[in-house]
Length: 183
Image (cartoon, rainbow, N blue to C red):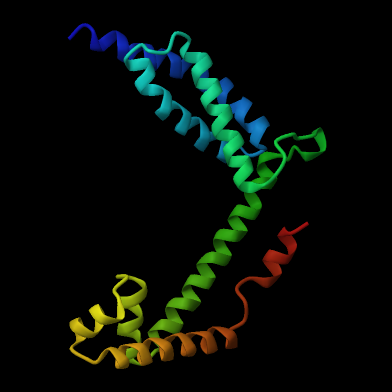
């Protein structure tokens, strides 16, 4: 039992001593505090077993190396350069605004979609929800509803066609907000 306490305290002390500097390092590398937090969290999760079994001779070095590699992988996925100039640094308050705008627009779009789905004929709506929400195949839907597979296919296609038409008639969610948020 005494052996577990030092291991736990080793990781806790590593975390307390490195979380702030690691987040700042990753924020500079990634250019985004939110991504930095995610990568730091992933790095701690990967390093934790090595600290617990004491296989890492220099846990802080392992942590920073792991975090740097995870950050580079994230940058590769985003296909942007990890080098940030002073002109690229953005105030945290201004970076939060597009996120809020995007959330508002997403909520508006979701409300429009929910309204359009509610207006579908019952059979089309049922088939669409079973297909898209419950991820059932056409055959599984046919079995569940006791109808022919061809009927399921036709109702699914009709539901998608009606949704497209309904959403095309509705104004885009928040066009003035999104155009203001873009540079």
